[in-house]
Image 1: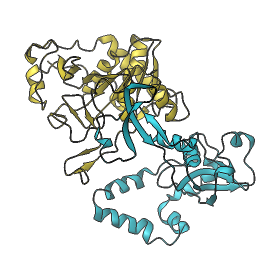
Image 2 (image 1 turned 45 degrees about the horizontal axis):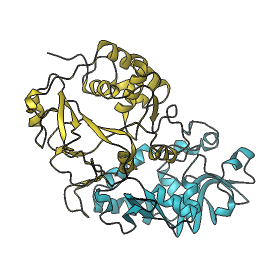
Image 3 (image 1 turned 30 degrees about the horizontal axis):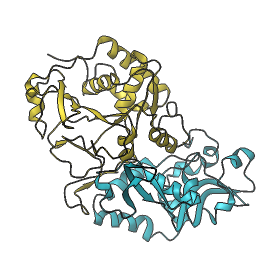
Image 4 (image 1 turned 60 degrees about the vertical axis):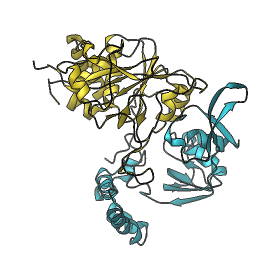
Length: 254
Length: 193
């Protein structure tokens, strides 16, 4: 059955559901989908959420990013959205390099830009990724930019909670510290997720991955807000305006 | 890095950093180690050596004849200037005196060693308050950066074989910018009209 929303819109809606009213939530550089999600949460269920969108003149309350880092380091950042080129079953992510040797990689990426710190101090971090494939979801990342879990004596204020892709939501199991399959987004099946994930998955309750439930799809209300007031806000405030115009609304599939 | 520069700006020898534990970022760094908190030995974190560069090179919007620099934006460059032993600043223009509002946010002359008037000195990156990044040139740079040979060609053409800054501006700064710099200085968007 054809869906009435794009992968981008699906991700924005699913990320927005993680934003809680009254908390402070943020996203970093080149984070168009989380930016839309933060604004959707405010319009939909979290009117008093404090949102910080790096690079947006309207939603970045500091003169430089340093003040944002220090806010997070003080423990005042409840939720952060981050992405990675590779993500492994221990919720380590890689934003540095792929392949080759350590000193001579095949591809080098810009690195963490402070993400290696935020991942340890945001109370919850959610990894988003627009691609769910075996090259992205690997047994072990080529380079650990930030670690999903650390020994108990490590000074750390928070930890990753979920990974959200166009295919599924994975959740960190608090006991095993590994990613479990929380739910699967229609029209995909748990078998699709397994076929496109480079490590073994079990459902959140320890049962086989096949028993993972379907993710509640975006509601009419969520999509209407996303395509209406959220899109409008992004355009008028210069918050990834060109992206919002091209990717939200119009029933565009991508 | 912020923290290391901030520690350098404060003149203290090291700074605790939350994060990075267990990452490969620490593999080749002898300036970052994991140490227990001296006040609470049950917790450990990274401790990083303060960063005191010998030289900082910064670019700002304008400077005055007294050596004060208005960067054109709030910037952590101030911390870098404080941390560094020698500070060289290129600016779009030199004026007689920064106005009061500019002085409020200025890099004061006591932190600055040398000022060089270098119009379009940030190109192909942008200079807030004057011009945005040159997207066409940046795309070319990214393409050239794919391998050593093409990057060397790029360097030869844009740096090694360019006799001076005027020749660089002549060859590489978009012609349509040059007529509008005076107005762009006053535009809020930072884009040439």
